[in-house]
Length: 120
Figure (cartoon, helix red, strand yellow):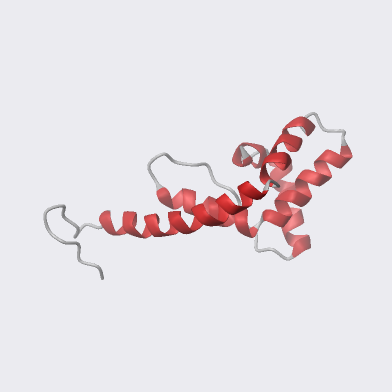
């Protein structure tokens, strides 16, 4: 839901502006892949690092009330400001980091199912 909202060029440009104003390193949200854990990990990290910028942009959009997407912005804001979202974001990011390490090791050329993997 966040990626779809921020993939719109106008919101992406505003998102970049807010990142600069807040002194946050410019990062963007990427589309998710069903098979690559790497992109999921990157998105969890991006949301965590840019949480303040995301909330600021959504608040600006809601307060301007001239945008046709105000309902979507309000829905996203309601979801991401719940304590359960924030707790899940932190926990799942940690779990996915570990899973990503394992996934990367198993994808190496020198890793065989019947033999042990060579971790270099």
